[in-house]
Length: 116
Image 1: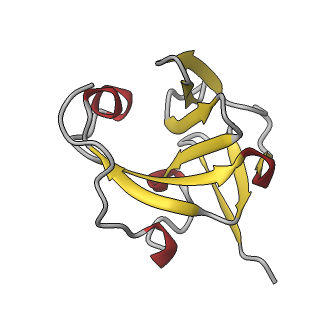
Image 2 (image 1 turned 180 degrees about the horizontal axis):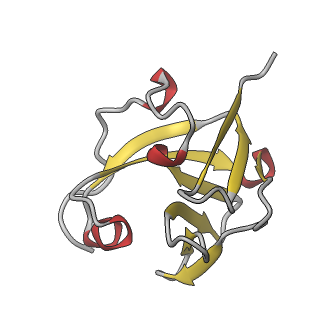
């Protein structure tokens, strides 16, 4: 049986149900720092078809941050959720999951150090 990962924003308006996580990593680039207000953040990627937006808010609001991706956030409480790429990938911040300490989210790989 496939494990289901659930999570959402601070107010619960945006809720996530996701399957088959891959590529857990951290990032400390200036875009990630400004998106979250943290020095370094944890990410985990999913195929877009494996992510369902289950809360009353549906899909999160987005802001176009690069040529290939948009940053996702809750339009009600402002919580950072992740990034929705043009490729069929949704990268979610590990802190938005209900069980954010799940071992599958653990990584020592830092995807990009420095600024973008």
